[in-house]
Length: 416
Ligand SMILES: Cc1cc2nc3c(=O)[nH]c(=O)nc-3n(C[C@H](O)[C@H](O)[C@H](O)COP(=O)(O)OP(=O)(O)OC[C@H]3O[C@@H](n4cnc5c(N)ncnc54)[C@H](O)[C@@H]3O)c2cc1C
Image (cartoon, rainbow, N blue to C red):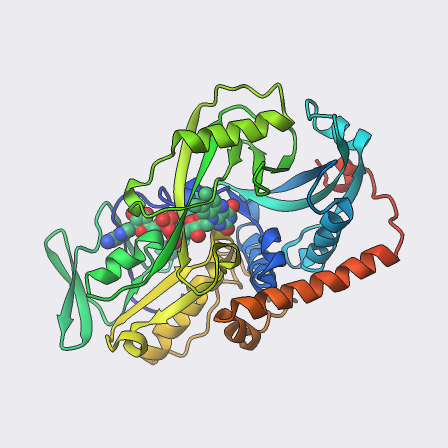
């Protein structure tokens, strides 16, 4: 779209690696509100752009978060988090949350455990078939002249002094002014071919897959170890998961363990006792999270464009690392911006001004969240947490101060 001559190489099958193993949601990252608020805000903003460019591929997914007696923080705190999320929802075409009584919750999710249920809070995200979304992006790239090849990857870099001038693939030499390493959890392996390292913290995630749509709306369920898993119904069936486990397995060799299966089944059966124990398959992938200071809990899910010329004194190579499917467009924009600066190309990004089918769009009325604050908080996990916490504390006070009008009827509200 910026007038470059482009070649895209995929070693195996497009979209079939981490992307296919995701939870299939274009979402803002509700839980990052607790320790990395700006990432939630940026992701909500770009999810809004994705909604515009791929509207036909997205389906609104209302999600119910049931709260039971003994919940670690209580329903008022849960609702506070959703109130905080409400501020960002308009950016991605989302709706304000609803507070649901016990009876309303049970009538919406037949079979949900009634014992100990206090009520629920709802919010909404977008469901997408991720492989289809990749396909639509490739079709758009192809229309702009990109050459796209599947089943062949980068085997070696061609180096001249401290500059990469091309690559070898299946024995063929291909020369290029700039190479972009966008290999998800394989970015370190790819960089290793040029003797540089990109430390990653791979977090493995498994889902159970049912071919049948088991419940009418999404569910967010608290696990025994105070984590959360989703039950996600869609036209393709139902996903239950994911797990989130640090792994040192290689990205291509990651496997679901029996413990993960038992963990997911045990949690789901606790809330949905009549759920079939026999699932159809499992799917697993690894979140390609950039290594960073701080403990596991505070890992930022933000992304970074790595300029290897500055970082490693190796010209001609850029890596895009971290991030998620829900900000793929912004990740591509910022990566292409750097490539264009290096190539002296001034054409601005237009990927938010045209749908993936090529129809023109008006610019978003929402401003991109501050990149200055983003840069500042990137390397300061405790300030990120303090930033998130101060907003939540304020939202909690606001929540306690006002009364809660009952929301409109759930099904008409979400148009389902
Ligand atoms: C369990 C789980 C749930 C998730 N849920 C969500 C969600 O609901 N929403 C969301 O926004 N994000 C989610 N994520 C994150 C999201 O899935 C990833 O950030 C995203 O899919 C990464 O896409 P990618 O293209 O970078 O990586 P991948 O999809 O892994 O693609 C990388 C590709 O690079 C190719 N490759 C590797 N080496 C080479 C080489 N040498 N030459 C050429 N090609 C090569 C691979 O074959 C692969 O196809 C989830 C992640 C996990 C693990």
